[in-house]
Amino acid sequence: MSEAVFGSKVLERLWGDPERRVARAFSIEDLRLIAKRRIPRVCFDFVDGASEDEVTMGLNRRGFEELTFRPRYLVDVAKRDLSTEVCGTPISLPVMFGPTGLTRIVSANAEVDAARAAAAAGTVYCPSTATSTSMEHIAAANGGGSRWFQLYLWRDREVYESFVRRAQGAGYEGLVVTVDVPIAGKRERDYRNGFTLPLRLPLRQRIEAARHLEWIWGYLTGPPLTFANLAEEGFGDDAALLGQMVNKELTTASSTYQDLRSLREIWPGKLLVKGTMSVADAEQAVACGVDGIIVSNHGGRQLDGLPATIDVLPSIVAAVGDRVEVLLDSGIRRGSDVVKALALGAKAVLIGRPYLWGLAAGGQYGAARALEILREEIDLCLAMIGCDSVRNLDPSVIEYRPGHRFASQQPPMAEAGRA
Ligand SMILES: Cc1cc2nc3c(=O)[nH]c(=O)nc-3n(C[C@H](O)[C@H](O)[C@H](O)COP(=O)(O)O)c2cc1C
Image 1 (spheres, rainbow, N blue to C red):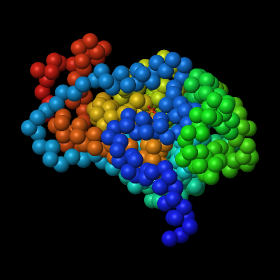
Image 2: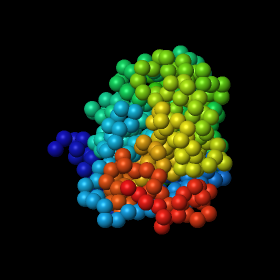
Image 3: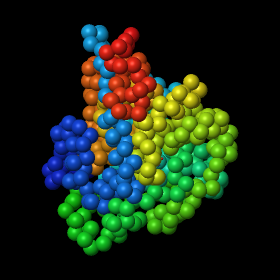
Image 4: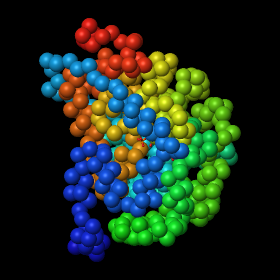
């Protein structure tokens, strides 16, 4: 037994086997609760929190909860197919890992673990520009899996052009441009916890953090919590300075659709915009030549007061769904949420917090468990509503509850037929 393997066995004894730990999670909420116990509060809140009063984060959940199903029985659903294709990328289930900055805050090798878990499950991990592992390193970690990368439209055009060249060089096929961060959202949990980069915790937070030995061990022995992609661009490796730069340069209050058009000219692969919440913006993005639109409110982390993404999805699908693929994220916690989004026209969904909780709960095993839970729940939901493939979902499987604002557009359940 090598020293490294022996070392990891000793540590496993100390903090428990992560695979067994996450096997006890039966829902995404279970993973969240394990994560809450295992990482310091400042890190948990960074992931769990949203902006201001966190109203939009709550609406995302309510949007799904207010939709119910209109099942059909005695339909042959013995075989069910969860696979689909998004912008030319085949995926084994309609769930992908969305971009999350500073993912490494939840565990030592979080970004590599996420890449491996997604590739093993046959889906995509789309790393953020703001990861602590470089995009090249992450690309190498996902083996032969499909690669998408998230980009911000930097103030300095040379920087994002360099990112585009590097993404191409590293074999990324899809570029996701996030447009809903003209400036960073006001995340008050982070302010209250004294969240800074590098982490310099107030005494109270340090005492709390000291209870999470596994996380501390990973923090001290793993790669630094910084912005590796920027360091690779030659901006140095001082996390505090890079953090300031991210806030000043990466959040692009001066970007316009002209920048998106310019990006389209230099990026030959699939191009998606993320953060679209209106038909007008969707139309403009389509006019710029994008291949896909991700309806997203950033999980409620940006403008508090935005509606639930599931509530705006149908109008965006109706407007541009015949020209580009439409995806959705924000608030997915159950397989049935995924089914609802697909029924209303999304090609697939992305998740953020669910896989971060998985990583915090058990590294690669936890991220894989998040996908496994959603896969089982999607499969179960398909069987229960009488649909044999995620590609055959349509709005007829949705039953709007009385009083729902779209309820009047739907024939009553008893009268409705579904082929
Ligand atoms: C901790 C965290 C960091 C995030 N960082 C980014 C980012 O760097 N770029 C981006 O486009 N979206 C980012 N997001 C938003 C996610 O891509 C996604 O839109 C959101 O998490 C979806 O909502 P959910 O967490 O409810 O699934 C982040 C989300 C979280 C939770």
